[in-house]
Length: 388
Image (cartoon, rainbow, N blue to C red; front, top):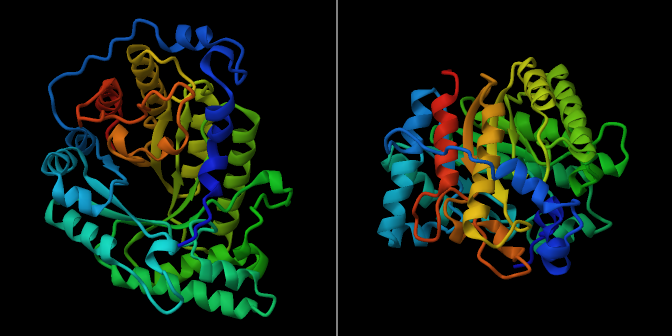
């Protein structure tokens, strides 16, 4: 099966970083010692008690969950992993990528997602779906359909609505939220509306987003419908441009009555890029002013460019988690924090190995499912968060 996989490679630019920029001569910023001085200060990561992230979040009216990228088979076989996941997570994300859920135009595959939905139900977890409409991780038959000059806009609209309706109806009453549309924004493409030039846009225009949301709402009136996007976090020009474009899109959707109810912020964070609390809080406040909830949907911290020393790396990564969450959890509209992966052994960032080949450590649990300082940082952020 052939997938589009460019999004993740482009997202953080880590492919180039991993292959050409060793730590000693990295040019992504002038001096790694500046970062160490900023983040490796004598910060106290102590916590009170050993209460799980799931319970710490719930006390504040928040949800903590994770995307189990290790797959259902591993979850069902590995009892230690299963126990840790049940203990720590109040929400489980199911992957509904077209390339997996719809291997051919007339066939759907729900083996893993059905199993995950059942697992979540059995253990009192919320179940979340990602994504219904995206222009990547799509099967060859859909690529061919997009490329065929005979394909009409009506055919593409029918494919989209059938796909969304079929999936959402199947899980109606069992789903907490859907990422209905994923990554529709790309200011670099130069459109006045800031939208990304995708096949969906080519065939259906900007209305493809509205069509997807209305179809999902008709199929399940109770699920929370989310628009999900990336690179909205740091105080750099690219992220600022994306914040502006995302807010513009959300305002447009709300003005036309599109049933979007929340913004999903992926939060794939860099350790070497700064946050601006004032700007980030203002963006979150502007989103909330539209009557939208906010979910942190794909949280992790890349340590690809950090020193090899695990103690240094873990402290920097934990500091990034705490710094970021201390900002975003100040906004009452933020209702969930979801890490993209659960342990370091199942991070998607592994496709971008470090130049020194040291194992990556971007998540709250290590390879042995033991909590790291990142876990402490998330716990501390939940403990300090205002109650919803």
